[in-house]
Every structure is written in structure tokens, then in C-alpha cells.
Amino acid sequence: MSKRRVLLYWCLGITFILAAHRIGEAQTKIEEHREINHNIRCTIQVQDREWTPTAPAIVSGKVENLTEGSLEVRVQPTLYLSSKTSSAERDKYWAPVDLFRDAPLPADTRPMDEKGEVVAIKALPVELTFNKKGEATDFRIDARHVLWEREISSVWPSRKLFAAVEPGSYDLRLVLETKSGDSASASVAVVVGASTAQEPRP
Image 1 (spheres, rainbow, N blue to C red):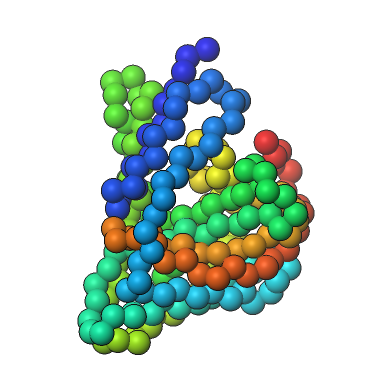
Image 2 (cartoon, one colour; image 1 turned 90 degrees about the horizontal axis):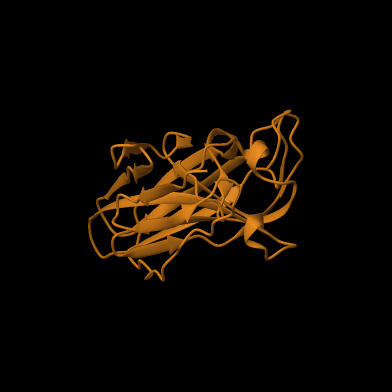
């Protein structure tokens, strides 16, 4: 069986290189220590703490300018779900999200070699502009409208919430990645219900 490499390029210069692997083998997403961005602050809340396939899973919040003046910043927002009952890597999920379009974060995908065995995925950032200190921008999204995957997986998120995430209790947080560091929200507890779809889980 041929090996396949997947190279994920984040638009902010954060690069994850996932080693070649045979189909079916689990891969851990490689992460590096990140600085904290003290120029912005993000907060989130949920409309309902129990998420079911038949009701919106609303996440709302705001991003606030903490500098003394105006600010322009490009952010890569990602939602993370971490199991409250398990510390296993397979019980952690992520979803790049466009906060202001209630949709997955757009990405530019292109082959990096002639055979198409190496794929580059470049996430496109969200641009924020603030005119003064303390100014904030609000957002409201439905977690069912973005695409999820296990953090341990080597593939770009491509599955719906209830097809990807196992039922259970989770901590939800939002992380805004920028060139000068990350801004992370406090965690919010949610309970993800069982899927009603027939799509098999891995």
C-alpha cells in the first residue's frame, strides 16, 4: 500500500508536518508552544449546554481590542472540544471556523507534487479592524454548520458535528491564532448528543 503525506500549511505561518502513514494508522497533530496575544481577548457562551442533532448548537461571543488605540489583526479561529471524562487524544476535536459567516474557515487546497501525494492546505484568515481601545465585534455561529475532526487525525476537518464527535460531556473553547500569538477563551461545558445519521464512526 502506498504511503501518503499530508502537509497542512496555516496561512499565519504555522506549519504542521504530518509524517507519512499507512491508511488506517492514527497520527497525532504536531503542535508547537505558542505565545499569548495580549492585544485581543475572545469570550464565548452557548445558548444550550446540551447539543442535539435536531436543534441549533449556538456559540456566541465577542472579540475585543485591548490595545490603547486602533488595531488591525488577522486571526485564524478554531473551536476545540475536549472530553471532560477522558484525557485520550482521540477524545479531542477541532473545527476551523469563520466566525462571521457561520461556516467553516475557507482553505486553499493544492497538490504539492506531480503525483498528488502531497497536499497543501492553506487556511484563509479572518481580518478584524478596531478603531479604538475596548471596541469589540460580536459573532454567533451554529457548531453544526462547521466541519470537525479528531485532533489526532492527520486529515483536514471535513465531517459534520454529530458524525465526527462521540456523544459525551466536553469543554468547548475558541482559540484565535495570529502571527504574534494566540488568544483563547475560557472553556464552556457542553454535552454532545448521539447522531441520528447512519454515517459510520471511525
